[in-house]
Image 1 (tube, rainbow, N blue to C red):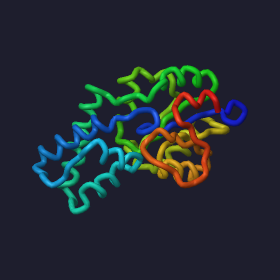
Image 2 (spheres, rainbow, N blue to C red):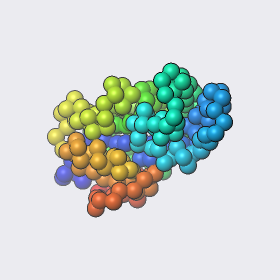
Image 3 (tube, helix red, strand yellow):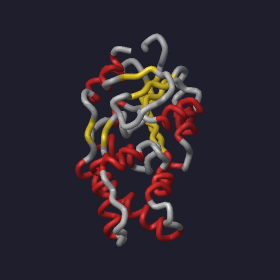
Image 4 (cartoon, one colour):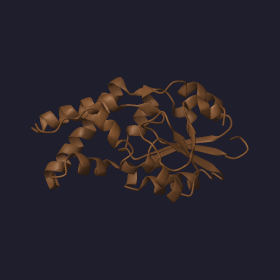
Amino acid sequence: MTNTYDSIIFDLDGTLWDSTQAIATAWQQAVREAGITDVAITAERVRGLAGMPYDAIYDKLFPEMKGEQREKLQKLCARLEMERLKEQGGKLYPEVKETLDYLKGKYKLAIVSNCQSGYIETFLEYHNLHHYFTDHDCYGNRGLSKAENIVEVVKRNNMKQAVYIGDTTGDYEASQKAQVPFILAAYGFGTVAADVKSIDAFSDLKLL
């Protein structure tokens, strides 16, 4: 990879960490507080929604809920999610810090996710990873798609040959729209039908 790329942009959920249990617990609390009794939020269900824009998640979970009721639930879920993550964080995949140490001296590193504002910052703060990354962006900041945010990060940081690493079909499609090569984190939450380069563990990035 040294002779091909100068920058690596990472997806977050399913690529750098797994926060699904913390998120599921927070959302289930929000659902209870909202008086909703017919929707169960599990870690497995959250894992299946990973990579989707925040608004699209609610279209999937609560298709009949509209207007003010849905807006209130979204705000409650978002607040409780951030509180939970600040308390217990998510689980880093094996050798993330060691591999970032290796990569930082060779590439510009960034994160682009479809999460809410503040989520990436919470990830970086909880695991003390700020110093590894030159930039990050997400759907929650301006409502831009993942592809648009990848393009913005590439432009802002003058990346000449970036690669995007993610774990879902949505990640792959965003990278193609952004005209950035893609590497599949095959240990993550999803799959990609296309014939793409993949890694079976985060530490494999040192071998590419």
